[in-house]
Amino acid sequence: MNHVLAQSQVARFMVIAIGSIAIVAAMRAISPILNPIFIAVLFVVLFDVPRSWLIKRGMSHGSALAVTIVSAILLTLFFLIIMGRT
Image (tube, rainbow, N blue to C red):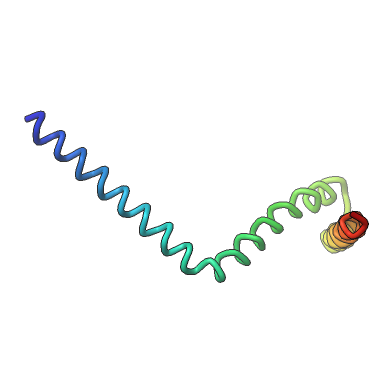
């Protein structure tokens, strides 16, 4: 019985390993499509926190969005200027 169980665990490991390799290969093949999507999701999550905080503090949705966008642009320009000097 232990022999059958050991074979089952080996087969399970092999299926998981091959599946993982297939998923990584597929993600690598479609990375030109996935990378912009992942970056967009990152920015949405990153900029939603200050926007939500401003809304909680009583600012309107539009104003909070505008402040968040302007702040992000200014922060980006600041870092570009700093990086340009080095």
